[in-house]
Amino acid sequence: MDKSKRLFLKSKRSFRRRLPPIQSGDRIDYRNLSLIIRFISEQGKILSRRVNRLTLKQQRLITIAIKQARILSSLPFLNNEKEFERPQSIARTTGLRRTTGLRRTTGLRTRKK
Image (cartoon, rainbow, N blue to C red):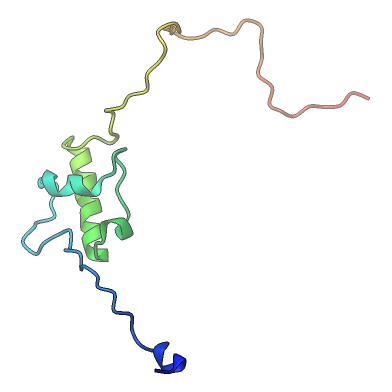
């Protein structure tokens, strides 16, 4: 075969077609938490449509369902499993901080002549 004819032949690489993440029987609803949780990252963010491999309509419905579940307290807004840990040596003060004699400047300085 000539090189020019070889360029137009398709490669014979086999690929495995991925199954769609939402089957036709699945209802996209705020009560279906087992479905909704698959489309949220570890930090609690809604994953993008490219990552989820969803259609535009499915992504919209998933986003609405996640937001409804968050409002109804079925899902947390943030995933707080890995909370920020403070060293034990730092003591936090409770109450308001008082500034004694210090003023905050606005950042604009005037020049004296």
